[in-house]
Image 1 (cartoon, rainbow, N blue to C red):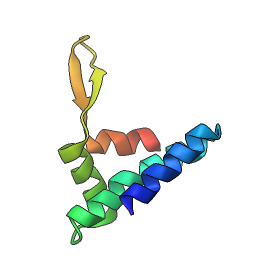
Image 2 (tube, one colour):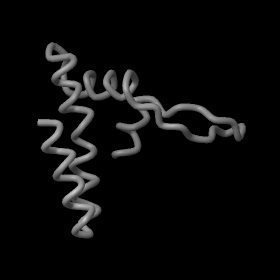
Image 3 (tube, rainbow, N blue to C red):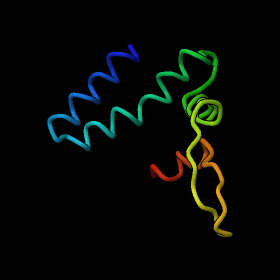
Image 4 (cartoon, one colour):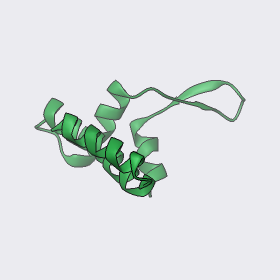
Length: 78
């Protein structure tokens, strides 16, 4: 399933469909989270998977590097 989603993202990018690629990419944490944490609810597994497997660097207010949390990923999607 994950391989299929990644191939679809690649196809979208090759065909200049960035929004479709983004939408599929944003479903990956939930899909992977469901496999890793089947007992958790959607939001909890999305956040937990992002926290455990994604390392998204950003500059914080002090100009130093920090990592975006799964909760922050969800907030940025709203």
